[in-house]
Length: 88
Image (cartoon, rainbow, N blue to C red; front, top):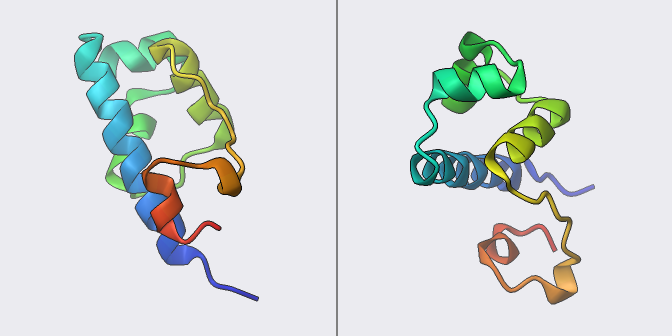
């Protein structure tokens, strides 16, 4: 069985970078994101720093708050950076 730990780590870094950029675009602070999602600010902070694993539920809440669509794109049609992360 393949080990995708590196892919997961790189993917998380890319996702968190995108989330932070989206927060800047929408002028939403971490404190405001916590209020919008109902996720404690301390939890979000630890998630963003990689100290704790973020839950799928939290990711979906963040997507809702930041108006991001959480699409799953099949590898064969993926044209973005994730293609290079060995997810295929």
